[in-house]
Length: 495
Image 1 (spheres, rainbow, N blue to C red):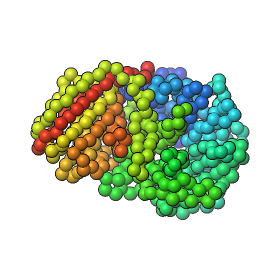
Image 2 (cartoon, one colour):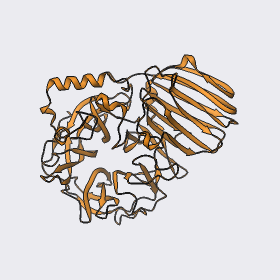
Image 3 (cartoon, one colour):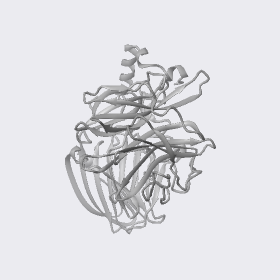
Image 4 (tube, rainbow, N blue to C red):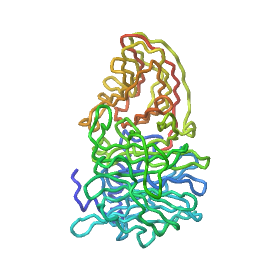
């Protein structure tokens, strides 16, 4: 389907009831609708936005184009939860209905201030010549869920030396002062992150560019997020325009972090380690973090990527959000583990242990489409040992240890309908241990794999046939011991 500019930028009120019904029918007929991940009611979901705990609930918004699986006129859609597991649809929160955001309410963040939730976002507008203009805007939500936009932009445009690719404000507070980091592009077409400060959340002043050692690292840095954890400073961002290097940077765009000393907010100096990817799967981008009432730092990402097509497109929807992940630091590395609250999804449980020696073993009574799987593989003396899941007669997704190459490998070459195979069908990380702990969350059309308590993560969409629900264990050319626990997971999505 070809999408004209007029179709991409239609307002929702101009869509007939008949078209809405047809759109909803197409979406609900899709065999790949998720059961326990946040997904859009129709159309396209992308960046998580405004993630904050306010008035006894977690509030999580996301970028939303309601009319199809393309990047059109963006709104903010609102979900909320008391437990990070059961999410309630709250409907459209921010509409692109002013001069400041006439061509899209783009990404941003939320922060509690004066007993209200302040939502900062980028207003995108276009002039008659289709030139972009970016404004940093503010909308304020009260305890009743009513949202009011401020009439004036809090930051009316980029500072000198930067283009209109100036977006995705993330705001935080320290000792009564407020800080905002914004993704930007320099005039020389390189990416950067800019720091602003305020005393009242309304009057913002440009402080400086965050000074990293990555001055020519891609052409745009999207969705920056700075926070401090375990006495370290961490800058998360999503650079565009990075070339692949071996196992690294294999996706069309990347997401990762710089870990270092705390940011000097007076000078912008940030001393840090090398850029590290957050996720080694096929589909992960634009993560955002927030803090729980008990002080844990939680991350949620977009399970998808820009500028790619997906098999759900023909059903008029695309993408979902990842499960929430708790962040910690160990050995100068950011670890991600599934939030403890996800145990609330668990239902029936199965366990088994066995030793395989150059064989493949189907677990016939374990077939399922939504489950959590905990797998320990120990004493690996095989050339290859791992698990196949979402398996059918001709389909399977494989995750395994390759001893010859000393890598952990995710292979979706036979996963079902392909998703952007031009970017490859395997993803790998170096690994040279004889034991590995694998924790997997499989949903109807996705998998999230956590290695050794979050040392590496693989997030990917999968599009198998509805009857491809099998689980198989295998060892090739040698033996390995498997210890397995599986929980069926309940559905939170009622179409």
